[in-house]
Length: 116
Ligand code: 5GP
Ligand code: ZN
Image (cartoon, rainbow, N blue to C red; front, side, top):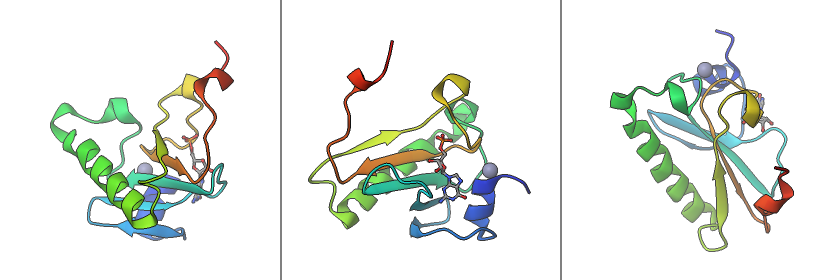
């Protein structure tokens, strides 16, 4: 198995886990860009959001429930946070296993920081 996030989900690569259940694992990003930078990852391998079959889309709702729970557990439900999932080349997606970045703990830059 060569996918990094499959290996983290399977426990073959270490990570700082903040949440785990039978479908999902959430752990701290190796190179955080905010005080909280958590990756929420389904244990099943999908390359990105466009690769989830329609009849398996409930995983997305589950991931959002997990994000909600983590935000309450860590207290940034009150201060706010951002959820990002990169998909494909233009997004700069590096790891080809579906994941949701959860960023929190500071005022995040607005979208004007992006060039057109
Ligand atoms: P992407 O650009 O694919 O949306 O983001 C991949 C993220 O995974 C990056 O923020 C990167 O720091 C993180 N990452 C890559 N490899 C590892 C790893 O082995 N462990 C952890 N915890 N994070 C990783
Ligand atoms: Zn994978």
